[in-house]
Image (spheres, rainbow, N blue to C red):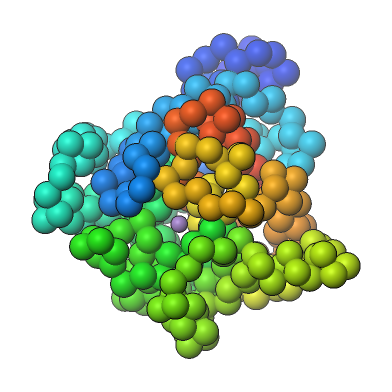
Length: 324
Ligand SMILES: [Mn+2]
């Protein structure tokens, strides 16, 4: 279903509205509903990502709507939701919380509210997406989607995120994939790309758990420098995905020049063009996969962070099969 837009909407004009990408969609006519979660309480290094969603929204007005990569993603209908009042209260409390018990309590409440929001979107046949905030934010969304249909996750990140809790926080941003795997009705598979900062415990977990398929960035760069193509490597990774795919995109999977304000930047990583190619290759496999939702996390509030984040967000929206 292509949503009805006002007759005078001109996608080629400069953005005039306040909406995401300057689009006039309301929540009722958007196929993709994006929930901003301005939560970063478990961040371990730098605290910049709670203001990411606002910065991405502002930068999105500079994104032209006919992408040379994904085309006219706006046509599916995109909307950045107003968070429910309870979630806003939790997010506000988390901004000043310092006690670990309090942060854990707020994290649990946040995840429950994200779960409820996601269930409501699924009931309305909308595609849910989460715009963080730190990478702990999408846990409730991923588990809610997986409860309806077994999914695999395409996970772009500098980190495994396989720690069983970190710094006293069971719902740490460094534990999202561990928590997804431990949740009831586990996901079928996690395909990790960009990984280059890890601990021994995580490496062992990834090697031992057949659901985890890690493509270490060091292996990819060795092979590319040895003459293999990025296309070959991407093809190997994407073939490991199952039918229904959630994309979990931590912006720190990219080279830190593209995300200088992210929480835990790591040198190396995907270029912007490699990221576009990766999503393009996923889109080319649309006859084999349903993209059931996505998250974009750890985007900082700086100018470059927001500009890159807004474009990655548009391309993530563009991985959905265009409705006819
Ligand atoms: Mn992460």
